[in-house]
Amino acid sequence: MERKVGIVVDSTFGLDQTFIKKENITVVPLKVIIGQAEYTDGNIDPNAVVKALQEKIHVKTAQPAPELFKKAFEDQLKVYDEVICMTLSKTLSGTVNSANLAKTILDNENVIVVDTESTINGSGYLAEKVCEFLNEGHTASEAIGYLSDLKEQGSLVFTVDNLQTLYLNGRLSRVSAVIGNMLKIKPILRFRRGVLDVEHKARNFNNVILYLIKQVEMLLEYGKDVVVRIAYVDRSTEAKQLEQEIFQLGERVHVKITGVISPVISAHVGLGGLGIYLAYE
Image (cartoon, rainbow, N blue to C red):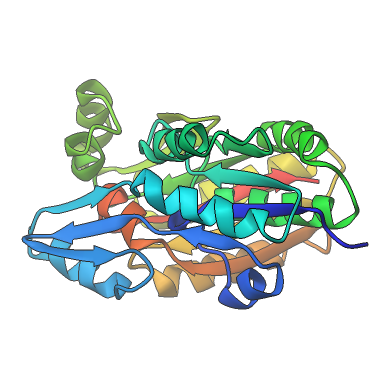
């Protein structure tokens, strides 16, 4: 069935380029600023952010200008009757504000802007599921209700080397950062419906892996299929280890590595970032 709703996302979703082209999705990029140099997200090697963080060079990010979203909406409306624009969580970025301003400027009620309340492969997974739903012939308003249900079924669980980067970028309170960095433990955080909290503290990285696996096992107890998407900043080896161990949990677990986290998000997460988007279906 031919889809009648266009899709716009921002560049932090980490969607596969083949999927983007196949589904005719428009991606609006954020900016990454390393020192005095400005880059477009999607046109910068993620290792450049890792290197900057290692060298303690300040890395900043910037949301897209409303004009970029306006053009994306106009391009999609040439093909589709309605447009859904999905962005990363408003608690992480003002990107959704830029999208809403573009909608106001365009003054078209057929454009719907929605905050995924997630990021990285969480937002990516939600976008893929919404795309599948729309391809079945559903309307934009029906897809928004579907997306709301999906948000309740998943969350991001991840670790970092330390919480200083998240604290300095205003994503975590000072108290949480101090507690999370005590005794040189490995902090484990959960990001759910736009809220970020330190959930657990592991003594070493092996315990982090065990904790993440336990989270998958707990979801399996619901009796439903479980989706696990793995992403990382600079821990590709550990990501493969985690994938192999989760794969052994059985055929009801659908696990895959989505790859390196967007440079924009890596700049805020910091070094040692490794995590999963975990959802049931």
